[in-house]
Image 1 (spheres, helix red, strand yellow):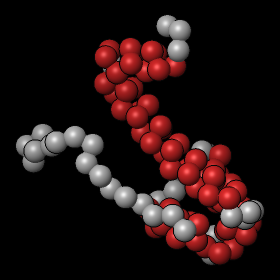
Image 2: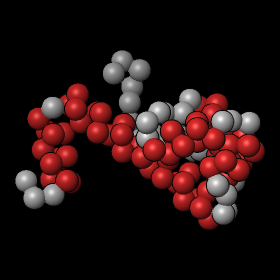
Image 3: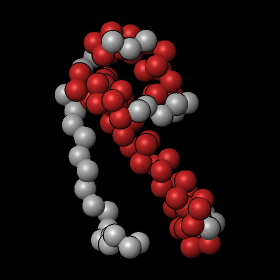
Image 4: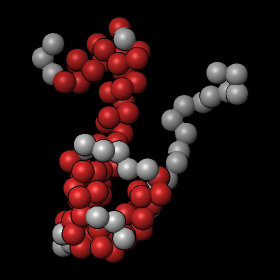
Length: 98
């Protein structure tokens, strides 16, 4: 396989469990990436953002490094201080019996 996209497509076709893990990691990466980009746009250090949120700087660092996943409350605190919002949109039609 020549590219990461081709590999991911292959995995999605052959192993749904690993495909779900890849999808989860990519979704979290997009969220954290938006957070980092906005922090940089606002010229805030991790320490400054953490102080605004009432969090230790180490928590912001671990979230940005991907070594921990923030809980929803923490994510909302961070996003609020960064002027970001969180939206929930359907990704496909689901019924209650699925």
